[in-house]
Length: 212
Image (cartoon, rainbow, N blue to C red; front, top):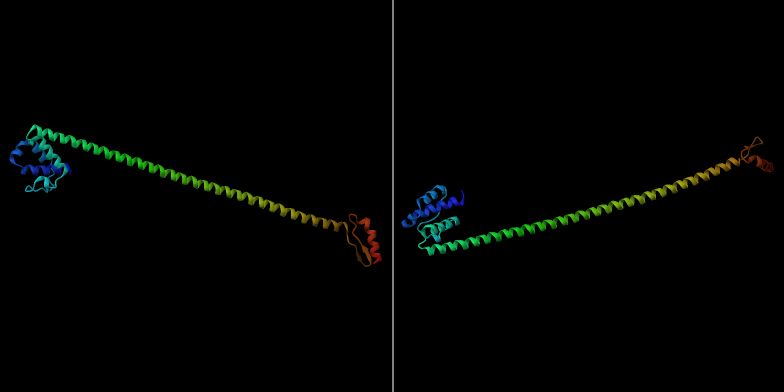
């Protein structure tokens, strides 16, 4: 149940033990409403042998006692006006406190929003820095690949050039062998392969062999 229903239960208890002349000033319709609206399961911890101002009652109960006093128990118009002014001042204080708490909440919301914005900025800056590092790393990797590819191409060119040079040397050697054919003496006869320029120098070789 709500505090209001519990306060009605405490008020109903108080009305049973206040002086009869005070109880009679409260309309029966008000008393019936109090009995109808009260929390019947709420255990009232008030003691009629102890003054009310010394007892631990609900804040709502104190407010309802003040309203009963204002409406039915004030002894003079001056006392009622004084109590009314107290009500007005209390309401102003309450509204000021509510406004202050609301302003504090708004300040906290603004602070939280600023903190969230700062956090987002930091996160975005970190992400941007990470992206920059990744981009630089990728760029460096691409540059290394290009350099390595160039080195590999240069190496291939050098290897191919060396291979071609070796091939040229071999071709030139083979060409010399083809053009300078060695004569072979078999059965005291000179056998020659006449290729290329050999016909022009075969007589020279025959003279050499004859001399030998």
